[in-house]
Image 1 (cartoon, rainbow, N blue to C red):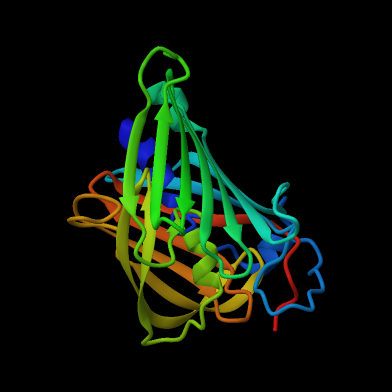
Image 2 (image 1 turned 60 degrees about the horizontal axis):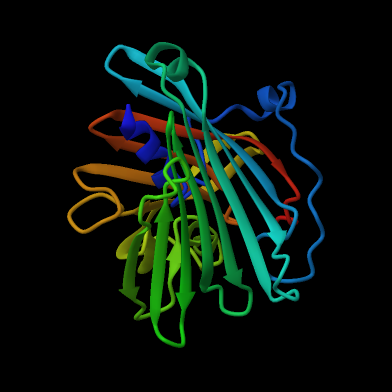
Length: 286
């Protein structure tokens, strides 16, 4: 069941933060436990603001097994405590739940704190907690753009005598981690036919991720019926974030917020679908 923990961490890459499964009709959403807070007025041009909070639900399907609850994902934006207003802190977590825990007796928790330079949106600091049942790892990455390198250090808190695992890689361009990459995508002028490449760091290793905007599609979601942009980041494959074959799709709202409202991951382990359950602190749609 280790693959589910790995999958949850990768989901934090592009939403994964993210987004979501078959959407819910707007009227159904209005009658459900899902609530969307009033939009926050934001004079800036950013698609998000401090105080935004997004909650998602991940389900897994394979063969005759359909829609099995596997995790809740939560994402928040706060001011970094030591940034003097020039830094943003993105917080994300994936927590196992439901049938996976009951049948497989397996649980996981993935947490990531990403500190970003608000002026240029480069990642500065990443802290990660990785719990897979009894296995726990704490990791920290420092991004030094003066010396052009990232240093990642990982320890086993259950075995303090064990030497830390350290990985150092060169920084050749503006870089993001798994979580900040999603927010970076939201800041881009997304349009059908556009493609670009992201430099993403995970555990001290730098990956180049091609991203394509392939279609404009109308979806029913928890925030209503909206037009979306279908984005396909190529995270699977040789020298990519996830080895092997697979496909990832994210649907961002086609407005200034570029809110991730649905996501789908297909791989050997089956299909993972993620849907937005609740959104608070959104900036006004434009």
